[in-house]
Length: 116
Length: 110
Image 1 (cartoon, each protein chain N blue to C red):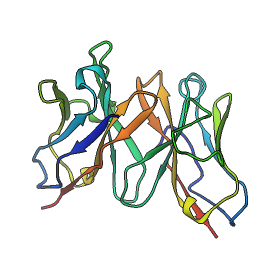
Image 2 (image 1 turned 180 degrees about the horizontal axis):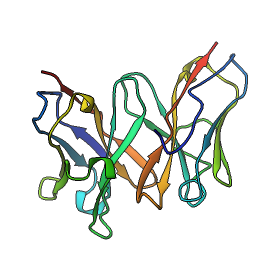
Image 3 (image 1 turned 120 degrees about the horizontal axis):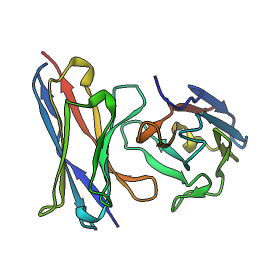
């Protein structure tokens, strides 16, 4: 059974970058499609992008194009999501999730707080 | 703001049947399976319904999903206090080439 464990909470200043990790166990990262979804406090879920292992493509939501980079280290089965030029409105819980039959399972989430 | 449209809130009394709607378009719900997620405060979303009407492992048969055209619904029968949570619909959007979500529905058990 696939399990995802994410890195700990981060506090960043506006303009900085943050890199969140997502460690996969129970399956090889090279054999699954992994996506990133964020949720601002009290708000809904927002898809940021993801990697499709079948075609090897990484797709980003238009809103984050140019500001987000999703990478994978298959030697450690760890995926990364880096978001640059952080703004106050990027304060959110960031989740990784496996796309097998729908987005499931999810990591526990990483809280990123952007504060001056 | 959200591609899929859900009512912000729903409510019912214990034992009642409640439905939550999710409206989309031809490029999302109209072309792809719908998924439903349950989220409790402070926790990650959990998959309830996949491929429109299949229950995820461990999900009681009180939960059911359906779809008609560009709309979908989640029905919860025999409502229980532990069903009080936020519910999200989701699907793949062929035009946006990504996952899209509804804004979420907060279910209150009165």
